[in-house]
Image 1 (cartoon, rainbow, N blue to C red):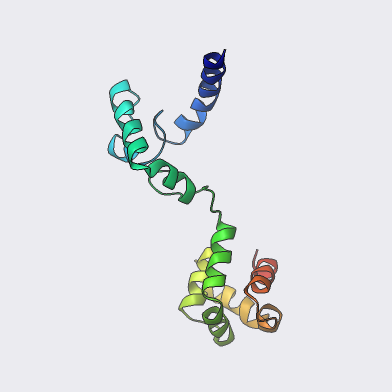
Image 2 (image 1 turned 135 degrees about the horizontal axis):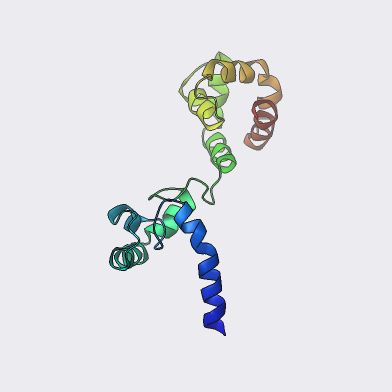
Length: 147
């Protein structure tokens, strides 16, 4: 009975695997070394490579190794982590209206083609974003104005 249930689950999920542009072994280092070839031999090698290297777990989590970018660390977490790690530098750049930290943050918010508009948003809302001297408050306020 367990084998039947496992088979049904595997068959149900196989459409998702093939839609993601890699074979039945899934994403990871193996899918990069043994390109989308659904023959048994290459898929066994890809699966073995993924299993022994741990690249599939890492790839799914962080969106690397041919895995999609919808890993467990979503864009919101990346933005939050970036703001927390660079809070003071972002605040300085926002006060000036330009700078490397502000440019990188703009890219995380999807303003890669319009950094000046993002910089202006932060500069115009500086007191609301940074007056609490808290990265958490900054994340909340930036999300309100930029998303």
